[in-house]
Image 1 (cartoon, rainbow, N blue to C red):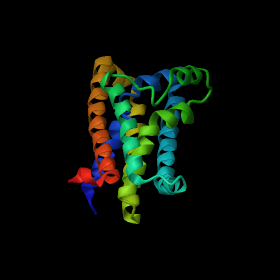
Image 2: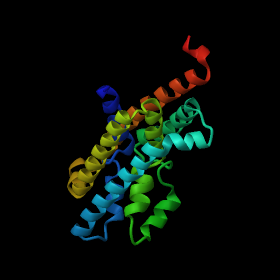
Image 3: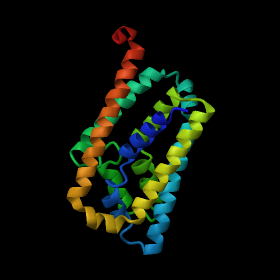
Image 4: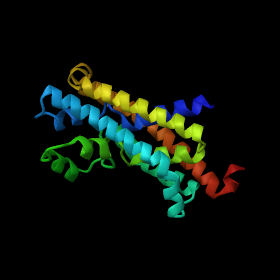
Length: 210
């Protein structure tokens, strides 16, 4: 087993999901909930997002085959998507690729925010889904998928823990601290985007590989 690959996947997913960057959003969406309700929302949103990513892990390859999309093409497209999200994060923003202004207004009037918009698209957003599919394409054995599934479970636990401590962490980190973490995560995501695009372009145009 190549543990370095699984560690890279976990770090990449942690950077993409960026639960610390979601703290203000989580607090805002659960501001009218009691402590018990907020804890339940944190648990259910984290679990639901993990389930979504597990489904993508199992069915991602089939979806690409169904639409006759090559791995290289998806890597380039995924790299472009990640780069847009990363640019937004480098500016300390949540990113319109994860939630539009209209979706934010709609969420403010929803009774339950557990599945939408918390689990999808804020946690298990397009960038996270793309990353899961790309890694699955390169590491598609049963053992690989099992390890990637464990990494997704760990990501869900980390997200749950961050959300449980949301008020305390938000006060401790402050706006500056959250923005700093978001920018660092954005830098990691940008590097990952470049890596995806480079591999995809080499696959589409073998001459680029020398």
